[in-house]
Length: 272
Image (cartoon, rainbow, N blue to C red):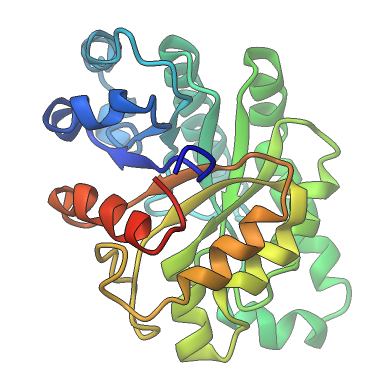
Protein backbone atom coordinates (compact mmCIF):
# COMPACT_ATOMS: atom_id res chain seq x y z
CA UNK A 1 0.00 0.00 0.00
CA UNK A 2 2.80 2.44 0.87
CA UNK A 3 4.06 2.46 -2.72
CA UNK A 4 0.69 3.37 -4.19
CA UNK A 5 0.04 7.00 -5.23
CA UNK A 6 -1.71 9.17 -2.67
CA UNK A 7 -4.98 10.75 -3.79
CA UNK A 8 -5.77 14.37 -3.01
CA UNK A 9 -9.01 16.29 -3.34
CA UNK A 10 -10.69 19.40 -4.68
CA UNK A 11 -12.68 20.98 -1.87
CA UNK A 12 -14.11 24.29 -0.82
CA UNK A 13 -13.07 25.60 2.59
CA UNK A 14 -16.23 24.29 4.28
CA UNK A 15 -15.64 20.80 2.88
CA UNK A 16 -11.98 21.03 3.89
CA UNK A 17 -13.11 21.52 7.46
CA UNK A 18 -15.33 18.44 7.18
CA UNK A 19 -12.61 16.25 5.62
CA UNK A 20 -9.62 17.82 7.37
CA UNK A 21 -8.54 14.63 9.18
CA UNK A 22 -8.64 12.64 5.93
CA UNK A 23 -6.62 15.30 4.10
CA UNK A 24 -3.95 15.36 6.80
CA UNK A 25 -3.71 11.62 7.40
CA UNK A 26 -1.40 11.19 4.41
CA UNK A 27 -0.77 14.89 3.66
CA UNK A 28 -2.93 14.71 0.57
CA UNK A 29 -2.63 17.35 -2.16
CA UNK A 30 -5.44 19.89 -2.01
CA UNK A 31 -7.17 22.12 -4.55
CA UNK A 32 -9.35 24.86 -3.11
CA UNK A 33 -12.37 25.72 -5.22
CA UNK A 34 -13.63 28.88 -3.55
CA UNK A 35 -11.68 31.35 -5.67
CA UNK A 36 -13.01 31.11 -9.24
CA UNK A 37 -16.14 33.33 -9.00
CA UNK A 38 -15.69 36.96 -10.05
CA UNK A 39 -17.66 38.05 -6.98
CA UNK A 40 -15.06 36.45 -4.73
CA UNK A 41 -12.05 37.74 -6.69
CA UNK A 42 -13.45 41.28 -6.79
CA UNK A 43 -14.16 41.24 -3.06
CA UNK A 44 -12.11 40.74 0.08
CA UNK A 45 -11.02 37.11 -0.10
CA UNK A 46 -8.33 37.41 2.57
CA UNK A 47 -10.51 36.02 5.42
CA UNK A 48 -11.19 32.93 3.30
CA UNK A 49 -7.46 32.46 2.70
CA UNK A 50 -6.72 32.87 6.40
CA UNK A 51 -9.38 30.32 7.31
CA UNK A 52 -7.95 27.85 4.81
CA UNK A 53 -4.42 28.35 6.13
CA UNK A 54 -5.65 27.77 9.66
CA UNK A 55 -7.31 24.51 8.65
CA UNK A 56 -4.12 23.47 6.86
CA UNK A 57 -1.92 23.89 9.92
CA UNK A 58 0.29 20.81 9.94
CA UNK A 59 -0.57 19.87 6.33
CA UNK A 60 2.46 19.02 4.18
CA UNK A 61 0.76 18.23 0.85
CA UNK A 62 0.73 20.58 -2.11
CA UNK A 63 -1.97 23.24 -2.25
CA UNK A 64 -3.48 24.91 -5.31
CA UNK A 65 -6.68 26.53 -6.52
CA UNK A 66 -9.11 26.21 -9.37
CA UNK A 67 -8.68 29.46 -11.25
CA UNK A 68 -11.43 31.64 -12.72
CA UNK A 69 -13.10 30.26 -15.84
CA UNK A 70 -16.82 31.04 -15.87
CA UNK A 71 -17.98 33.22 -18.77
CA UNK A 72 -14.78 33.46 -20.81
CA UNK A 73 -12.13 31.62 -22.82
CA UNK A 74 -8.40 32.27 -22.81
CA UNK A 75 -8.37 32.71 -26.61
CA UNK A 76 -10.85 35.59 -26.86
CA UNK A 77 -10.58 37.63 -30.05
CA UNK A 78 -12.29 40.62 -28.43
CA UNK A 79 -9.61 42.93 -27.00
CA UNK A 80 -11.87 44.22 -24.23
CA UNK A 81 -12.87 40.72 -23.12
CA UNK A 82 -9.20 39.78 -23.21
CA UNK A 83 -8.45 42.51 -20.67
CA UNK A 84 -11.06 41.08 -18.29
CA UNK A 85 -9.59 37.59 -18.64
CA UNK A 86 -6.09 38.93 -17.94
CA UNK A 87 -7.44 40.62 -14.82
CA UNK A 88 -9.16 37.46 -13.59
CA UNK A 89 -6.07 35.31 -14.07
CA UNK A 90 -3.92 37.81 -12.18
CA UNK A 91 -6.51 37.99 -9.40
CA UNK A 92 -6.37 34.22 -9.10
CA UNK A 93 -2.59 34.34 -8.86
CA UNK A 94 -2.83 36.97 -6.12
CA UNK A 95 -4.81 34.37 -4.16
CA UNK A 96 -2.18 31.75 -4.96
CA UNK A 97 0.58 33.96 -3.59
CA UNK A 98 -1.35 34.68 -0.39
CA UNK A 99 -2.17 31.01 0.06
CA UNK A 100 1.24 29.66 -0.91
CA UNK A 101 -0.43 27.70 -3.72
CA UNK A 102 1.70 25.95 -6.33
CA UNK A 103 -0.90 25.39 -9.05
CA UNK A 104 -3.87 27.14 -10.60
CA UNK A 105 -6.20 25.36 -13.01
CA UNK A 106 -6.95 27.16 -16.30
CA UNK A 107 -9.51 25.86 -18.78
CA UNK A 108 -8.49 24.75 -22.27
CA UNK A 109 -9.73 26.86 -25.20
CA UNK A 110 -10.16 23.87 -27.53
CA UNK A 111 -13.72 22.95 -28.43
CA UNK A 112 -15.33 20.13 -30.38
CA UNK A 113 -15.94 22.69 -33.15
CA UNK A 114 -12.21 23.42 -33.24
CA UNK A 115 -11.42 19.76 -33.86
CA UNK A 116 -13.42 19.83 -37.08
CA UNK A 117 -12.61 23.35 -38.21
CA UNK A 118 -9.13 24.52 -37.20
CA UNK A 119 -7.73 23.07 -40.42
CA UNK A 120 -10.62 24.58 -42.38
CA UNK A 121 -9.17 28.10 -42.05
CA UNK A 122 -5.75 29.49 -42.94
CA UNK A 123 -3.37 29.59 -39.94
CA UNK A 124 -6.24 28.97 -37.50
CA UNK A 125 -4.15 26.76 -35.23
CA UNK A 126 -1.37 29.32 -35.00
CA UNK A 127 -3.87 32.13 -34.42
CA UNK A 128 -5.47 30.28 -31.52
CA UNK A 129 -2.12 29.86 -29.82
CA UNK A 130 -1.28 33.52 -30.47
CA UNK A 131 -4.53 34.66 -28.84
CA UNK A 132 -3.81 32.52 -25.78
CA UNK A 133 -0.37 34.11 -25.48
CA UNK A 134 -1.85 37.60 -25.73
CA UNK A 135 -4.25 36.73 -22.92
CA UNK A 136 -1.92 34.79 -20.64
CA UNK A 137 1.50 36.44 -21.02
CA UNK A 138 1.17 38.59 -17.88
CA UNK A 139 -0.21 35.67 -15.87
CA UNK A 140 2.65 33.43 -17.00
CA UNK A 141 5.24 35.96 -15.82
CA UNK A 142 3.42 36.38 -12.52
CA UNK A 143 3.20 32.61 -12.05
CA UNK A 144 6.92 32.28 -12.68
CA UNK A 145 7.63 34.98 -10.11
CA UNK A 146 5.65 33.25 -7.35
CA UNK A 147 6.57 29.65 -8.19
CA UNK A 148 3.10 28.60 -9.34
CA UNK A 149 2.12 26.37 -12.26
CA UNK A 150 -0.77 27.22 -14.58
CA UNK A 151 -2.16 23.81 -15.52
CA UNK A 152 -4.38 23.75 -18.62
CA UNK A 153 -7.32 21.39 -18.19
CA UNK A 154 -9.17 19.65 -21.02
CA UNK A 155 -12.84 20.65 -21.28
CA UNK A 156 -14.26 19.77 -24.70
CA UNK A 157 -10.88 18.72 -26.10
CA UNK A 158 -11.27 15.92 -28.61
CA UNK A 159 -7.61 16.03 -29.63
CA UNK A 160 -5.52 15.23 -26.53
CA UNK A 161 -2.37 16.67 -28.14
CA UNK A 162 -3.45 20.24 -29.04
CA UNK A 163 -3.55 21.46 -25.44
CA UNK A 164 -0.17 19.86 -24.75
CA UNK A 165 1.35 21.75 -27.68
CA UNK A 166 -0.25 24.96 -26.41
CA UNK A 167 1.36 24.51 -22.99
CA UNK A 168 4.73 23.76 -24.59
CA UNK A 169 4.50 26.88 -26.77
CA UNK A 170 4.97 29.12 -23.69
CA UNK A 171 8.39 27.57 -23.04
CA UNK A 172 7.85 28.22 -19.35
CA UNK A 173 8.19 26.02 -16.26
CA UNK A 174 4.96 27.65 -15.08
CA UNK A 175 2.69 26.39 -17.88
CA UNK A 176 1.89 22.69 -17.73
CA UNK A 177 -0.93 20.26 -18.49
CA UNK A 178 -3.94 19.08 -16.53
CA UNK A 179 -6.37 16.27 -17.36
CA UNK A 180 -9.94 15.88 -16.18
CA UNK A 181 -10.82 12.19 -16.46
CA UNK A 182 -14.57 12.81 -16.70
CA UNK A 183 -14.16 15.42 -19.43
CA UNK A 184 -11.94 13.06 -21.38
CA UNK A 185 -14.43 10.21 -20.89
CA UNK A 186 -17.27 12.47 -22.07
CA UNK A 187 -15.27 13.36 -25.18
CA UNK A 188 -14.52 9.67 -25.76
CA UNK A 189 -18.12 8.54 -25.40
CA UNK A 190 -19.92 11.47 -27.01
CA UNK A 191 -17.54 12.93 -29.62
CA UNK A 192 -15.33 10.00 -30.63
CA UNK A 193 -12.20 11.12 -28.76
CA UNK A 194 -9.62 8.59 -27.55
CA UNK A 195 -10.07 6.90 -24.14
CA UNK A 196 -8.87 8.57 -20.96
CA UNK A 197 -5.51 6.81 -20.74
CA UNK A 198 -4.60 8.19 -24.18
CA UNK A 199 -4.90 11.71 -22.72
CA UNK A 200 -2.38 10.72 -20.05
CA UNK A 201 -0.03 9.32 -22.66
CA UNK A 202 -0.39 12.43 -24.84
CA UNK A 203 0.49 14.71 -21.92
CA UNK A 204 3.50 12.67 -20.83
CA UNK A 205 5.71 14.40 -18.29
CA UNK A 206 4.08 17.75 -19.01
CA UNK A 207 1.21 16.40 -16.89
CA UNK A 208 1.35 18.02 -13.47
CA UNK A 209 -2.28 17.80 -12.36
CA UNK A 210 -5.28 15.55 -12.87
CA UNK A 211 -8.91 15.86 -11.83
CA UNK A 212 -10.14 12.38 -10.99
CA UNK A 213 -13.90 11.95 -11.38
CA UNK A 214 -15.99 9.08 -12.66
CA UNK A 215 -18.56 9.43 -15.42
CA UNK A 216 -20.56 7.53 -18.02
CA UNK A 217 -19.10 8.93 -21.24
CA UNK A 218 -22.22 11.00 -21.87
CA UNK A 219 -22.00 13.94 -19.48
CA UNK A 220 -19.73 15.68 -16.96
CA UNK A 221 -20.89 13.65 -13.96
CA UNK A 222 -18.23 14.11 -11.25
CA UNK A 223 -19.34 10.86 -9.66
CA UNK A 224 -17.57 8.98 -6.88
CA UNK A 225 -14.63 7.01 -8.29
CA UNK A 226 -15.81 3.51 -9.11
CA UNK A 227 -19.42 4.46 -9.83
CA UNK A 228 -18.98 5.15 -13.56
CA UNK A 229 -17.40 3.40 -16.52
CA UNK A 230 -13.86 4.80 -16.67
CA UNK A 231 -11.17 2.13 -16.97
CA UNK A 232 -9.19 3.09 -13.89
CA UNK A 233 -6.62 0.34 -14.34
CA UNK A 234 -5.66 1.79 -17.73
CA UNK A 235 -5.52 5.33 -16.32
CA UNK A 236 -3.29 4.43 -13.36
CA UNK A 237 -1.09 2.19 -15.52
CA UNK A 238 -0.45 5.20 -17.77
CA UNK A 239 0.18 7.47 -14.78
CA UNK A 240 2.69 4.99 -13.35
CA UNK A 241 4.94 5.52 -16.36
CA UNK A 242 5.34 9.25 -15.65
CA UNK A 243 8.10 10.97 -13.68
CA UNK A 244 6.29 14.32 -13.34
CA UNK A 245 4.51 13.49 -10.06
CA UNK A 246 1.15 15.05 -11.01
CA UNK A 247 -1.26 16.13 -8.30
CA UNK A 248 -3.99 13.46 -8.19
CA UNK A 249 -7.05 15.50 -7.25
CA UNK A 250 -10.44 13.82 -6.71
CA UNK A 251 -13.05 16.34 -7.91
CA UNK A 252 -16.60 15.34 -7.03
CA UNK A 253 -19.97 17.01 -7.28
CA UNK A 254 -20.79 15.59 -3.85
CA UNK A 255 -17.82 15.88 -1.48
CA UNK A 256 -19.35 13.19 0.72
CA UNK A 257 -18.10 10.67 -1.85
CA UNK A 258 -14.44 11.44 -1.14
CA UNK A 259 -13.79 8.65 1.42
CA UNK A 260 -15.55 6.07 -0.78
CA UNK A 261 -13.56 7.19 -3.83
CA UNK A 262 -10.30 6.63 -1.98
CA UNK A 263 -11.53 3.30 -0.61
CA UNK A 264 -12.66 2.11 -4.05
CA UNK A 265 -9.29 2.89 -5.65
CA UNK A 266 -7.50 1.22 -2.71
CA UNK A 267 -9.66 -1.89 -3.14
CA UNK A 268 -8.55 -2.05 -6.77
CA UNK A 269 -4.95 -1.82 -5.65
CA UNK A 270 -4.45 1.45 -7.56
CA UNK A 271 -4.06 4.24 -5.00
CA UNK A 272 -4.41 5.16 -1.35
